[in-house]
Length: 262
Ligand SMILES: [Zn+2]
Image (cartoon, rainbow, N blue to C red; front, side, top):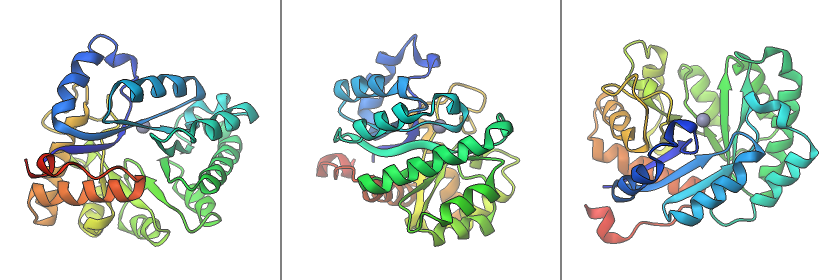
């Protein structure tokens, strides 16, 4: 069974030396990869990548760490790129108070505007949260009902319940395999299988046993194994469910029958 990575950054400089070779390898074991933008300068590069590789899809948005790139023109760019059929979501967007607490207000404005753009376009959102849980969820409340995913979910079951109540999916990546995963493990157990997505956030956060190395989309297999172990399921069951969830949320095409049975 092939994998879906619902959150990747293959345009990162860390892949510059061997991007084509890596993508050739991934073509055999990945059903789909969603490449997430951080700023408008990424959008044309994502478009080019999607054109070259059939299994690459895109998300366009302004990441809170790139908040200085947010302005009216950026909003127009997001709207424009959402017309491309392989651009499936607005992302990644959200709040990050770890790196830039001083820009909190502007981050909230950018998130608010991009949530509205997504809803007007009928597209789901890919949400980033770092040390901003209270503000993020109160802002999201105003946009219910929501279609989207809280990527790299790192909170406990109480926050997981809030996200699920809003209609969101939870994206789990390499950190669920870390020894200090703590409350994230509780959330993995708590969240129903039909609301889980697999992701890498590559090149960052490689799962155990590849921890510390450059992450890559097919390492989602290790995260799937860990989730299966925590939930008392087979890895195949977790992958099948996560793939079905990703297809449903993002409107990804159904795989060819032969590929699915492998
Ligand atoms: Zn990311």
